[in-house]
Every structure is written in C-alpha cells, then in structure tokens.
Length: 423
Image (cartoon, rainbow, N blue to C red):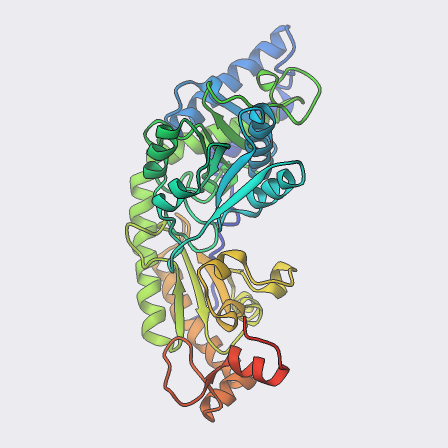
C-alpha cells in the first residue's frame, strides 16, 4: 500500500470548514467596522455577531445568546470561569473541588488561586479515568463555592457523569464549571440538562477557526472580568471582538448541529475498526480509558505500546504520513508523565510509550486500514531497537500488560538498578 497522508490529531485541532472560511472572508475587508461603533458599519457587524451568538448558543442549548462570552480561546475561557468566579464569590467561601485529571488550563488556574488564599480538594478517578459523583459530594464543605469537572477527558477520552454531579451541586447550592473542550462538536451538549453554571469550549476543535473561545455563563453566576478596558462582552471581557473568528465559529457550530449524528456514527465506526485492527496485529498494547462505547468519546484512542517510547512512534508514524499526538514527556517538553496517566495509576513505562490517535469526520476506512497496516511494522522496528524489548525476550523484565511471571516489571527493574523506589 502506498504512503498516504492521514491526520489523526483532531483533538489538538481541526481544519477550518470551507463554509466557515467563506463566511469569515467578508469580515476582513467588506464588513470591517467595530461592533462597538454606532454607525452603519458597526451595525452591520453587530448583526453578524448576534447571528453567530445564536448559532453557538444553540450548540449547547443555552437559554440566551447573551449568556455567551467570547474570549481568545479555551485556555482564556477556563481562566475567566475559574478565576473570575472565585474573585466574584470569595466572600461566600474559599474552597474549590476539582477532579484529578482536569485540563492544564484548569489545573493551573486553580493552582494560582491556592496562592491567593483558596483551598482545593482533588477528587480521584478510577482505572478508566471516571469520577465517582459521591466522591465529589464527600469533598464538598461549607466553604465550597465551585466544583470543576470536565465533560470529556482531553487525554484518554473518558466521558464524565456531569449530569449526576450537577444534581449534587444543585442540592448544595454550589456552582459547577465544566470544561467541554474535548466534547463540543463531537457529542450533544445541553447546559440546562447538565445543570452547569459555567461551560467552556474552543470551536477550532470542531472545524472552526483558532483564536476564539467560548464561555457559557448562566446569568445567576457572577464572574469578575480579568481583562480590563472597554465594556465588550457585557463588561466581562474587554477588547474588540475577533469578529471573523466569531462568524466562522457560528458556522462551525451550525454545521456541527446538522451533522452531529452522522459525524458521530461515522467516526465511532472508524474508532472501533482502528481499535480492533491494532489489537489484532500488535501484542503488548494497552488502551487507556474505556473501550469504544458509551463511556468514551467517539473520536479518540489513547494507546500505550509496551517496551518502546511515544516519541519514536510519533516520528516514524509521521515519516509514513500519519500524524498523531504523544503524551510522552519528550514531546510534551515536560519532565513528568501526564498527570492524567498518573491519576489512573498507569505504569511509568507504559506512560512513556503513550500516543493519542484522534479521528475526524473526513477520515476514511482506507485511512484506518493504512494505519492498521503501518503501525505494527513501526512497533516491530522500534522494539527490535529497544533494550527493554531485548531484556523482556531474555526474561530479565516482564510485561506489565500481559505478565508472564518470568521477570520484574521494567519500572521495578529500573528502580533496583538506580537504588530509587519505583513510582
């Protein structure tokens, strides 16, 4: 089979829809006024923004398009939701509950608050990365003002029981913030049914443009602005709006609503085909998170291939025309394994051999079959170069995924050599 070009990194970003691009173009030159201006040029733009707001509000079933705040991206939306809510409500309490596997924009926003007098309780997850709502209930105190739980995990694709958690926070009279970065455009979202007061997402994850983020804010949830200037976005996010990007995001949201069931059905089929094919042809490979089905988002597989590192897998796949993401420390430029993989207690060696394949609506069966044919060859090549694989074959170390009883795990073996305890 000839080398193809296969993009399997849709959880990082997606190409802009042609319809969205065409809708954006006039707002760069012909319809260029500021939406804050009172003249007819400003009015033209305000009408376009209002229509885009309505389309985006429909994607999440918001009560009103006025409940949306536009930001520069998902990271800013998370920061505004958490810091803005904490700042506006600190007199009610100084305690926040968060899951152990939130997106870095959430975790780092909360870490910032701990340096400014807030206390935090972290809720653990089970082996597939799912939160137990009763653990959230147990973590709530009389000082709790906010619970932060994502809808879909950005690394391992686990869908969280947000609706059940929303019932608990409603009982307690506490606000619930939900990061929907990995979910929006790939599964139905209804903020009223979920019971969230704050929810954020990025349209570039579902074929909209970059440079635009969305924060849904229930009108009862008070949020203090952290960017000071004009009165844009209801006074909650100063600065002239990124009009072309908002217009494009509106079209992407509109198309996502129309194509949702078709998109999910197609991508879920490809996900299952990829999962089955890789497990048939590769030994000592592990899926992190739930198996394809109701507990997993339809487009993502997080894989640990034993005895080799994620960086090598990514680079050789790229050489063969296949683009994936890696959660290994080398590629993420971090000295630590992903906190998500640590939270599910994945063996350190497996975490180092981690890659993420995320499918999109334009991927085909032929794309998937090319990956199924190509990836096992890459795994074989890397293992034949790997000292870990040689030690496994010699019985010095054992497999974590399928233990033979012939040796120690690589992590324990490494600890014995170094004299340091295994992590």
